[in-house]
Image (cartoon, rainbow, N blue to C red; front, side, top):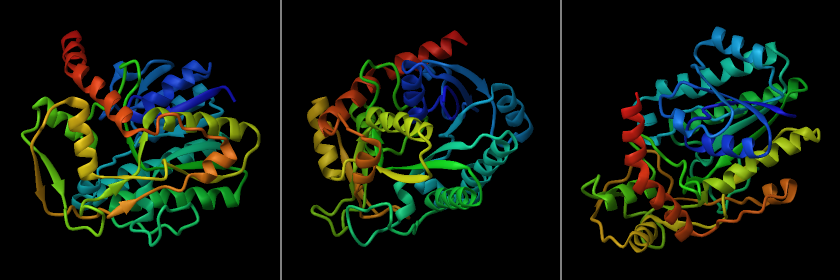
Length: 334
């Protein structure tokens, strides 16, 4: 398996995986509409600008490239926005995924790696949560991803189509060499927003909900470094190459940090005592989400290297400090 078609490969997570695919010698074609991705973030392979809603162009590109596998990262990811604009999420995340799957089948491509989310679990009764817990999303974002997972399961049961769904917990951090990282126009990620507050880009960091049944009243999340997540994607290709069957894997470290703990860690790393303010809960938020990733470790021999909140924030901070220069340079080049 040498030729990999990557949707959303110019975005945050996709660009890190594309980087590692290049290191491994894969022939990579990136398909991205650049709505949240950036050309400069593509460190290997070739980029084609295109939208998954354009099924005829998508078919043309895939037919010409003839990939051995498809990695699908292209999606909208903001929970709060999905509650306000649910159809936007079902159109982009679910309908566009179906377009991609139909084109794959028409071109006899039978290996698929899907970027899923812990949001499919909703509010689980037991933590850490394993992959056998039924999906029960509490917001349209999670629902849009769960629908794709159901399509994949049905498709796999009906044919020789094989897929891997990787359910991400909270992805954070940046490339250790500072080449790529989060660069969303309006990021909703806690660590990124904390660092932007430390930089002075935001006047204060809002803490959404301080009355949850957790140790300090704020939400708890399992934070995974983007480099460890990228390694998991490379391992899935090895697994499918060895005729591995369709599987679902959690991607997280199995323990979490509260919002307040993340804030304190960010203040320590940056050395800046930025302002925070408590406000009401956001619709669709779960009090706590922690991953049981034992299946990923056992079946794919995944060995995370960056299970350290300080390191995660440090790499994100080093990236955040140089992001403005990169964006200004790219704007000037145009």
